Amino acid sequence: METTVKYICVLAFLVSMTIAGLNGVEGTADYYGPCGKHDIEKEAEKLEPCTYAAQHRRVPVSERCCSIMEKKVKNPGCLCAVLYSQTAYNAGVRPEIAVTIPKRCNIVDRPVGYQCGAFTLP
Image (cartoon, rainbow, N blue to C red):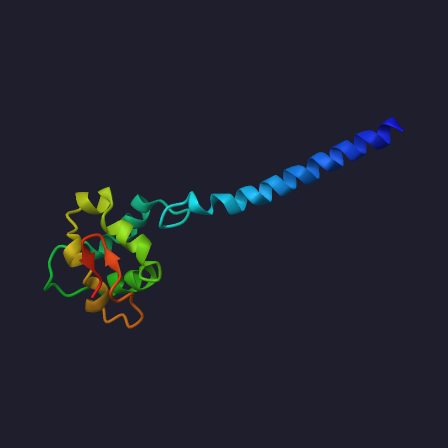
């Protein structure tokens, strides 16, 4: 009889922990930043091929930069956070110019009109 009670207690404990764990997974969705689980500074490093184009408005944007940017515009909140990151600032990225890169790359499915800080994506 004691063994049955122990198993029931263990089973109840496991069920309650499973339920708590599942609720915890849902509850942490708001914990992550605009890039989800990805670190903003590391995401900014991935945009290194775009640095020169993000500093000068009339410079042609490299194909490599455009292919990276095409992936980044799918999450405009993350892109915006990356453009205002410390890594981008240290690299000399000018957000007012960087927001023009998706248009300069002729990315059709870009978030036109998305407000990124003080600037709007064209």
